[in-house]
Length: 95
Image (cartoon, rainbow, N blue to C red; front, side, top):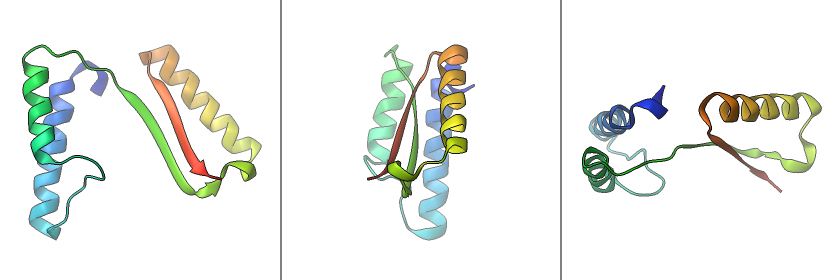
């Protein structure tokens, strides 16, 4: 659903960041900041094209110890995202 309304997801991210800063005085961002997100919002409003990518981050899971069940879920998710939305899935695991 977010793929079809980029402005809505960017606005939601801005609102969630503001709530987080107010309640915990911490940022949600690992990379970038609220100013960059505001800049992105302006770019999207002016017609800048966007492309989404979905990432799964599992630092506590070793790539060498992924079970067959885990592989099936990841592959099914990858296929669904590609076939339904044309989105790429990237996975990050431990060694």
